[in-house]
Image 1 (cartoon, rainbow, N blue to C red):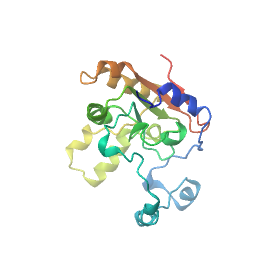
Image 2: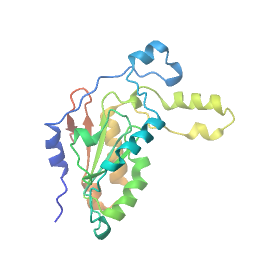
Image 3: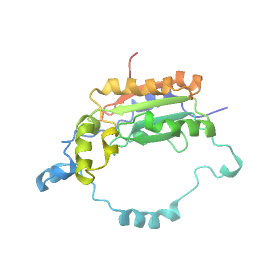
Image 4: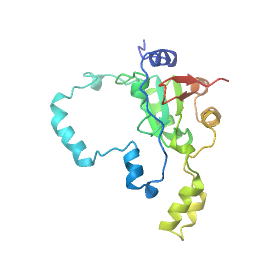
Length: 214
């Protein structure tokens, strides 16, 4: 019998654990000045520091499932969410190791995650999918055309740039509904899993995760 939490149980956890962040002044990287960098939430962590962390913490590592070689891994929930470093489902859903599979990309879109969901569902068998977008998302702050313009400066003769999309959005709630439609409309998705796919919005200021109303 599975002891993995359900979506309902994860939302209950969120009521008592709400990491919060301030809104950011979204500015393209090539437009940042020294002043705007000082005003931004900026990470100074670099690869060398990460490697040194690993070297110093390896001795404290313990396997989350000592009998993994003899067990079949099953995880009930897949969480599709944004790559924004302020959007951390392990924190705002109080996820413990092996309780959920997290798939992250620009804005938390379903289309680029679909192959991952299908492959992992084949391997471990999901029962529910959470699509979680968040307030103050960078995907609201620029357009695909702006990204294409940047890329054309690098490769002005590349015709493929015109057909590229980058996950930008105009309406937060509608973007969640559109991503749910991708999952529910895929002929490759198991019917029972598609029916148990739900949309949410994570408010980074309050830490609350709210279910999207039908």
